[in-house]
Length: 91
Image (cartoon, rainbow, N blue to C red; front, side, top):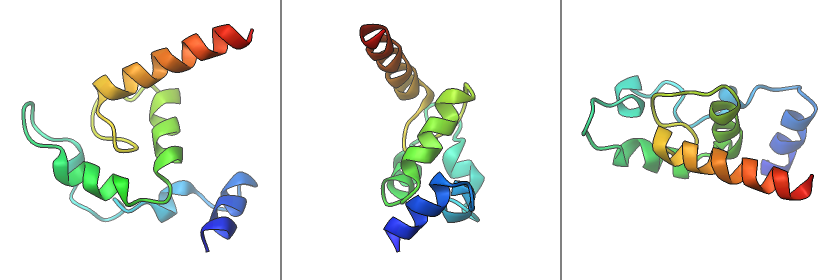
């Protein structure tokens, strides 16, 4: 199933959001109050088969709040910087 899903996502037949584990979950888990635990949200993300697509979406779209792809904004900023550095090395 996973191979077919990735293939369908790659050709744009399906939206990654349709397969997200968080679909239908309590949004408050993914957008917690400052200082609240993100453990439950990250556990849902870590078991998700579209985690990478979710993370890419958040990075490309500059999502500033919430847990996306199993990462907080601070963690996503670090990944964004790493990707920028890696892209400069390739150029």
